[in-house]
Amino acid sequence: MKVMVAEEMGMCFGVRDALAALDAIAEPGAVTIHGQLVHNEVVLHQLGARGFRMSRESDRERLPETEMVLITAHGISQRERTRLESAGKKLVDTTCPLVRRVHDTATRLQREGYHIVLIGRPGHVEVRGIVEDLQAYDVVERTTDVRQLMSDRLAIVCQTTIAPRTVAEVHAALVAANPQAEIRFVDTTCQPTRLRQHSVEKLIPLVQAMVVVGGSNSNNTRELVELCRRNGRKTWQVRDASELQSDWFRDIDCVGLTAGTSTLDETIREVRDWLYHHQPTRLPRVQSSAEWVRYFKQNAVNLRPIPWEQGACITPDELSAIASSLRGWQLGETSDGRQLRAVARRYADTMGDPEFNEAIDLFIKEEQRHGETLGLFLDLAGVERARSDWGDNIFRVFRHALPRIEIWATIVIVVEVHALIYYNALRRATGSPVLRRSCEQILADEVPHIRFQCERLAILHRNRSRPLLAFTMLIHRFLFTGITLAIWLGHRRALRAGGYTFNRFWQAAWNKMNAAWRRMSPGRYRWIQPADTTSEFCQIASRSKFPLSSQPLRI
Image 1 (cartoon, helix red, strand yellow):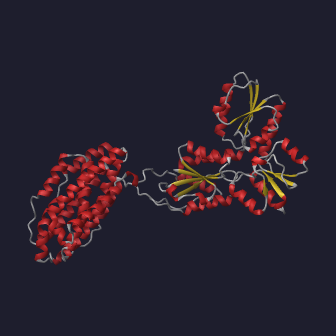
Image 2: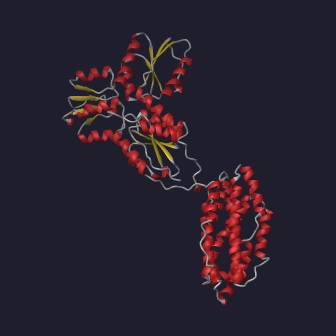
């Protein structure tokens, strides 16, 4: 799984300066942090472990017990500052300069006669600190909160961590709702917030999902999460690596990583390392027709050697047990495939997949090779090849009567599931090196054949409703039952020679068919194609202080 990180993410300079001020304090127990220093549970836990006292933001009206009080990066109003100082408290001020700029801008504009409209989150500690010094104001969080205001002079300022897109939308709505007013707009969102939002916007087209690291009540983290989800990306917000879950990434090839402005570097690295080293349980993907063409061509030149020079080497009793069955089965493997090719051509034309025709041709050639191999053994054993077989005739008529690729694929799967049992029984029923090696080669071919057809059914069933899919599976079960009984009736002597009673044969066929049904289920596969991330991926990696994974994408 690829991990791509945003160019700009994590702790801003205001939070770094606040933490640096705390590091300089020799006696943490003598200091009360007035509210949450930052909205990040990991940082707060570390501060508590060091001995700092902290007031809950809901209890900031109560005076801290310690003489020394630290003002957080979110800032406080001048009214609150005066209250603390009047009570004899010594203040350590870590207010972010960009937050202080909003305070100063709002009070200045109020003095100039403007009614202040603050775009921000009502009740947020930063917003409370700003509006407590204002005589009249309105806080607007989203466009649905916008209304016509009574003042004819409006000044718009912003909470520092509000999303730039939200600012633009609310600003436009305020202008539209107040045509009578003179409106002055000062964008006081902080540059780190804008940079982090912009970096995420660049990253989103390159990834399938996003992980956003930050406190559960962090506004700027929440804005990053909403930005990702608004752009259609599956997104998880975590406080640290311990909250990550393996199941989230089961279908993900490339994940993006960003973090809020109060997230520690070490927390980001832990999350990044978890993602880097984590290899989720991968769902397989459906192979393309071109990939199946390559497989069949490669398989055709990697055949196991068969010792034909040794002759049949089979006893009369062994031959008597299998000869009749083998004649009928061999005939079934010799179809010229004309009907299947015609059905495949219609399907390929409909799907726009011309390489499927070549894959079917190679599949048929491989089946014909099986028939020729069995035929050569019959020749060596002095057994005449069959020209007709009732079981083969039934299958041919049934397939020709229903000329659809789904019918063909279904019948092929059910028959080849039974072929796995049949060839295993045939291999065990004789000591002939030629026949045993032939069966081993055919068994090695049949497993990919089943997968090839199951994947095609998964494609065909992908958009099928659950009720229709359930009905399809019911038809499969009826078909399975009929074919199982037919094969047992026609080949029971050979199967018994290989150690299969009817009960054992039925159970083995059912187990293998269940595996095939699971393989043809659309839910078994990944259908999202990985993003093409080559050029921009490398650019982001080179500029980031958190290097992204060079781990190869695993298919």
